[in-house]
Structures are given as C-alpha cells and as structure tokens.
Image (cartoon, rainbow, N blue to C red; front, side):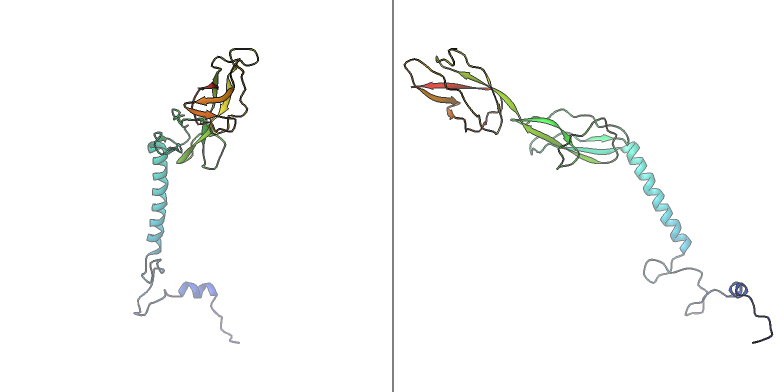
Length: 209
C-alpha cells in the first residue's frame, strides 16, 4: 500500500482525454443510426424533434383547416353518396337517403359488421367510413276478388308482406258457380310459399274457373 495520496475518481474522470479513433483523432460525436457513419448526436436529436413538431403541426392543420374525410358505403355498386370534409370536433351532416328497391335504410353504421346506427350528433375524431344499414321493406298488398266474396264481403282487407320473404297465408274467397284457382300477380301464380319480389305496393287478383 503506497503512502502517497491516491487521486480521487472524480479527478481521474475530469482529466481523462476524449477517446480517439484509429487515426488518432478525437471523437466528439457518437455513432449514428445509419450504419457506421458518424452523425452528430445533437444534430440528430434536433432533426427528430423537428420531424415530430412538423407531424403535429400537419395533423392540426389537416384537422382544423382541411378536415377529416367521411365516406359513405351504400352496399350498392351503382349508388353512391358524396363524401364529406368535417373538421375535428364537428358533426357529420346526415346525407340524403339513397334508394334501394325493396329495402328501407335504417341508418349508417361506423363499422361494416356493426348493426348500431351512428349518432350524427357525435363529434368527429378522424377519417371514417359509414356503412348503410338496410332492412327488407314492408309493403301493402291489395286483393282483387274479381267478383268473388270473402267472408260475405265483396272486398278484402289489405295484407302486409316483407320483401324477400314468403307471402304467408293468403285468404280463399268464394264465388257462386265458380272454383277458386288461386292468386296471380303480373302473370305469375302467387301462393303462400312464393317469395315477395315486388318492391312496392301491388295487387293480387283472384282467378276463377
């Protein structure tokens, strides 16, 4: 053990010269992120900060000046609804209802697999697509007894049917001296099992033999 006073660790660190490279030159910069090329650390940090600030400014600019893009998917190839530009925090304007024969629009969903309609009073937070929610339309069917009677009346009450579903139970009228042969619509025989193909109110006519 030497009797001389050993220099403190802090003094050694303070007097240690900068590291040198193979050429004997001092290295004041750390290794960059682009392979073996040295990049000044402070300059690299400055670039990263500037990129982050630029991204934030661009996002704010787009949200408040450019706005978010709202598109509408009608589920129909030949029917489109115009896209909207909406600023951050504002609301989407409910578009005009597109027409789809045989169906009724019940709302717009924020996801393709969702059945919950979007509330148009909800503030917008980003780009989005709204998907049309359709359900088969219900429609009136009138019955023409063609001279027959139903329950003693010359008229029959209207029926309500659903597009794409069977007509269901149909009444059987009577006519003196004739046999009821069924119902027809647009030249086609309609039975309880016939699928509704008409897209609006229509009339079935009794056939007698």
